[in-house]
Amino acid sequence: MTDGGDALDEMPVRDIDLVRVRYVDAEGIEHLSRLEDAADVPFEDGRMARAIPSYPGQGHMPGHYWAAKSGDFVDYESVLESKWLTLLDFDPEVTAFATQPLEFDAVDARGAWRHTPDIFARRRDRSVLLLDVKNAEQRNDPGVLLQEERTQRTCGRLGWEYAMVSEPDGQLWANVDLLSNARRPLYLGGDLVPRLLELAREPVEIGELMRFMEFPDLARGVLYHLMWHQRIVTDLDRPLRETTLVRAAAEVST
Image (cartoon, rainbow, N blue to C red; front, side):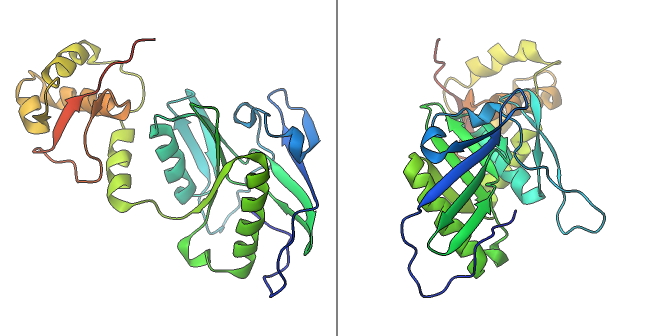
């Protein structure tokens, strides 16, 4: 991720004069549009605007994340970025997301700049969350702060929410990471789903729930699958233990 802007100085940033958006649609066709025309583009359905580099000795590890929301792989640039993809995949308000979705090509009072944000997320209410993922030790770098300021202002013009994030909350991440191992479709133990949902109609400890199961190891995997899809819920700000209370969520008919 690069930003062509100069370092921060004492001169205030005036309103952005010109911003264009470069993106590649689902058919592989590249577009360069005015900022105002980009607000309603389904970037979550498009292709990456920037290829993620991979070479020996690089300081981060790119890879592919299998997203339960789409049933397909999403490329990521670092392990830290993959954590945020996992959290977005778990978030029930997020319906779709994409990485390296677009490039801002702009000119402001400090000069010309370009930036490709890391993640575009579409929420259930059609609102947008745009994320940049940075290691905590980079957060106070003048170039990073300028990139954050420019992107924040640009997203404000689009009506999008923007955030620059680093490491997620440790306990929440530990729990979501554990549950993510069960995010894929069930190919074994699907017959246990009605029983687990019935037993969890009232709050019940995980250990107690497993004692009702003939094959507890299998049932635990099914339980975690239901918790990933939030059909069974708990307080994820606390460690998951045998004494953790879980309960079935209200099923919403569609």
